[in-house]
Image (tube, rainbow, N blue to C red; front, side):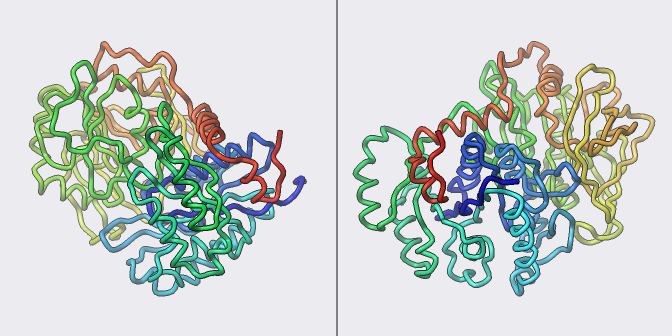
Length: 502
């Protein structure tokens, strides 16, 4: 029995990557800390960075993080429509947690009635179950050419009866134009829903922007709820793009004294948050590499997940990456493939049903004696296991269409003990005879500190782990504390018709 129902809060943006997901995550933890039963929601997410709910459904990683911050179990209703791009013009459509179809962008937007109806159905269920729903928008909420078909931003806010907070990113410049321009072009009925503005990613002396706040409020008649300084020292999973702070094709080699880890930056890279624990380890220099280069100076190479494995494999061969990867292997470098990257390390990838494109079979790198067949049914599971020959336990999640057959020339990587909380006795992945090449279907495997230590120690035996590694719950607390310091929480609670909790 819930104490009361609060007005839903919609976090909409002036553009893409202004920090909507982070703001929504922070608010979920702030409200949860105040004793409110809060749940996140995003009607439609376009991202190859997805995860698996405890009951075996696929949703965006951002909504899983927001649910964790809210201290509720993630469900398919929190992200009822997930678009997973697998080409420049097409995407797999995951509807309420299960694969529905593959659509071109033109086909998807021709008639959004089905998607919008499913999104509303999920929103209604969440609003019945929880006191408060924090709604995240998508991209810019003022794309006027798509406005009538956009069921993610103001249309969702209207259906939910939500108050809107508009988020703008001052770090990229033009914050006055972002906010005033958005408010100027949206219809008056939607402008009336906007009850506050958050200015995100401020750098420098915040006191110097006080006159900017005054000017914005006088221009728009809408209160600025907070100017949030750029935050450091903790990490929250990004939603749908490799973080802007990531080093992509740097001209320099890894910094002296650090463990150089190279990541092949596929055109259809997926689940890049698998790499976040490495990126935020102070002993590691993690570089994303699009273009072939010598891997001398790097200790480890990662082939990440891909939403179009055969297409990205063809891209890898066409650019000449194969020669550099083989040279790195011959020099004794450590290589690990995650999901699609694991499939690429095998001998071949067959797609008899045309799951990811034209049916056919592709020759792979043959660094592991493994053959993969893509199947129609997607494997979705949270899983646990133990690295064979080691004592550390691994946990992660599986999202893949492929079934990989491992020959006797390879050792399996993991002994799997459970999937979706059901005990199993199974094997995952493959390891080369010398232990230098590994493949696994486990996403998020480096989230477990013991597995990260195992991997980095394999690459650099002298590696010493961080003295204290922050877990996700600690990061959510730090995020909430950071936002609470700079937000006018009294106004925020007034917006949702709830007095400020002590």
